[in-house]
Image 1 (tube, one colour):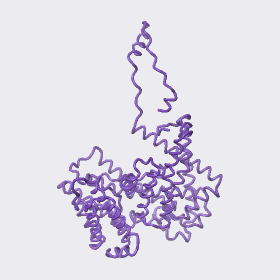
Image 2 (cartoon, rainbow, N blue to C red):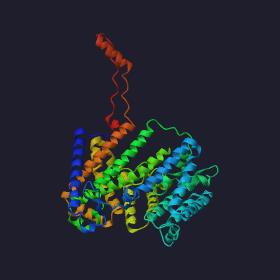
Image 3 (tube, rainbow, N blue to C red):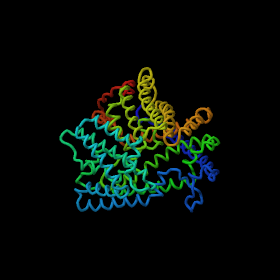
Length: 537
């Protein structure tokens, strides 16, 4: 089945209607649970007084969101605004030195916030991995980088290195792990790119410019060194038409998203409710399923907004940063599931695609996914929840390939060729429906807890069977069809169907002769296409 397979318009309208009604119904259940339990004792730490205008409490359970857009927003805005100001002045006066100015400002900002001993720690890791990269042995660079990353995940190395941070403030731990973790990943990217360079080596100054670019330093996203090096040293700083308008619009969209999320936190406590298992046992099936879905949607929104703010600043610096992650509402396959596109591109470039090749061989794909999730486990920090999450996602990614290989064999291939494209799309959507909920259940393990994921699975497939199961799967089927329709329209924009060829001259002459009543030799009829060949094409 091609991606351009179309369904009747009335069928698509029906799917959209069912989906919208189901979303409103689930949101209404969550709103009722939030309103009736706002003063619950277990909610004291997660639900606190919100905006005065609403007269309602607000869900403040996500430390990361509150840190960015409430508690420390002035500090973050001050640091990024200073970067934008100095970068703009440098771009106007001495554009050839702008990457050096980025490095100096970033180095001073890190020094001011974390102290000179922390800067010394970061520089030592940079020098170590730079020295290893001069040997130009790829596996040695990779092993050294992973061992260095492991020192931030296990004792006593963590405590020893944490002692290099001066002061005692709330963001100390977040900035320490964020800066060190992303530094190691950037240094590994530099080392691996230096191994690929055939003539000479990159200068260590290029590594420091790459690592101390302030917008990316603490919170990412990761931009591979080869892309950063080309873009940061680009001499032509002219912008495309309407580029500044697009950057301004992007900033306005992110600001609107922050306001909308904060407003919704006053009415739906989607982050605090999953922490109270006693309350979850009393909630309806719709509220529980809606909580699982909205938690994943929120995590995508958070990643898109946080990385989007940083990306807006980097686009002002004439960089092309990694795009926001693909929304869970637009996903139904494991191959496209990620919440950080920068890390995803890093893993694909240096591990997954490097080992997996074209991703057609089952054994190569298994080795590639095992190594990829092995690095991911080390990046996230080995623990029970991360190991379970990695196992199920690794299995899901390989199971997709096994299923595709199996159904490409006979007699399944002939059966699909014998049916219409619309029917093939409907059947595939049925299988994608179960795949979608596998993605949801596997990922709420990492975002919430193992107990919450177990409760959702039991309520959806055991206690709620068959009524809840059938209805939820039907709504999910409608969602998958809506996603496929959006992909179809995007494919038509990216690769429009060719126009029909013009009429041959003989046929045009015959038509003219018949219109004037003259005699003309009949044009040769075009050969009749073989339906089976047409279908195969």
